[in-house]
Image (cartoon, rainbow, N blue to C red):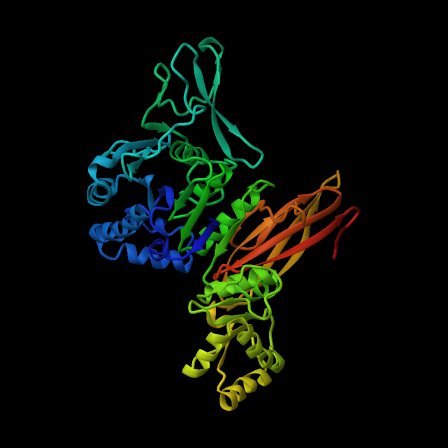
Length: 521
C-alpha cells in the first residue's frame, strides 16, 4: 500500500476503498455546533461541505455522518477499531443513532474523556465545558488493543510519572520515568488517568490543549495535540498497520501515524488541509520515512510532462483504465493494454508526429496478431496512443489508415484522462527594514502568486537546503509577507505558493549579507 493524501469528498473516496483493509480509523468530524467557526480553512471545498452539512439541522447532520461511518465499518478489518471524536453538541445522537446501529451495542469498548484543561469558566447556565468525548467501537470481538508498555507503569512498587518531551521538530511525546515519590519534583503529571497501583490505563485522559506558543501549532484552530493521537495509534495498531483519517483537518493523525511507522490514508475536501498536511510530513521526514502521494483534482502539467517516463506510463495507463506493462525497456512499442488486451502506447511528449502513428500498427500486430486481426474485422481500435498533444500530420495519418486500410487507431490526450493545469507563478521582493550594531539585518519578504484558480496560501523555509528539500518554517501565510532577521553570511530562503487547485510553485532566494544585502542567483 502507498500512503496517500486524497483531496475529495470522503464518502466517494471511502466507497472506492477495498473492504476490510484498514486497521484503525480516527475521525474528528466537524462538530454540530451551528457556528461559522466550523469553516476553518475557508476554501471552496470546505465551505461547500459546511453548507451541505447544516442544511437540515441535527437529523441532516446525523444522516450525513452515518453514511460515511457505514463505509468505515465496511473497510475496517475484523481486528480493527474506530475512534470517533465529538463533543456535547451531538455525542448522544452519534452513539445511539450511528455507532450502536452500525457497529452494534456489544462492540462498544470505551467512552474516552479527553480533559484538556482549558481556561473556560462556568456561566450562570452551565459548568465549564473543558472536555471532548472519543467513542471507541470494535469491528468484532477479535479487535486489537494493546497499550504500549511505555505508556503505563506495571503493577508493583515502582512509581512512574508522566513526562512531556519535545523532539527537534517540536512534536511532543509522552513517556514515563521511574523514581520514588520523594525524588519527583515539578513533573508534568499529564494523563493522571493511569492507575499507578494496578497498571491499568483509565478512560479519562488529561492532555493539554495546544495554546500559546506551543511549537506544534500550525495555525489550525481545532488542531489536536500530537500526544493524543500518539496514544490512540499506539494503543490500537502495530507498526505497518493501516491508519485512516477521513477528516484530515490540521493533519495531526497523519503526521503521528507516519512518525510511528504506520501506513496511512488521509482524506479531506479542503485543498489547504491536504497541502498543510503535506508540508507537515515534509518537515518531519528522514531517511526512514515511507514515500507518499498527494492526489488532487488537477495535475500539474510540468510535473507530469517531465517526470520519470516509466512512472508516467504506469500512472496514465492506470488512470485510463488499462494495465501497464510494469517493466522497463524492451516493450517493442507497447506500454500496456486495455482490459480486453488491446495495446496501449504512451508518449510523454507534445506534438506527436505522423511517423509514430505510421509505425504503431506493426507494434500492435506483433503484440497480439490474433487480436489485431479480430479488431480490424469487427471495426474496433487496434490500439491507443496516449500523449500530451498530436500534430496535424499524426491526426491525418490516423484518418488515412482508417479510410485506406480499415485500421482504427485512437489518439488520446493526457487531459482527456486526467485534468491538467498549470502551476501558479510566483515572484518575491525583498526590502531591508533595519540592522543592529552586530550587523544583523531584518528583511521583509513579499511574495506574489498568480493563478487562474486563485491563491490559497504561502509557506516559507528560511533555512532552505536543496538536499533536504522544502521544510516549512512558516506553514501558513495567507498574505505572502514575512519579516526575518539574518546574520552576516549566505542564506537560502524558499517560499512556496499553493493555489485553489492544490498546485504549487517554489521560488528560492539566495542572499548574501555583509556590508549590504545582495540578492544573487
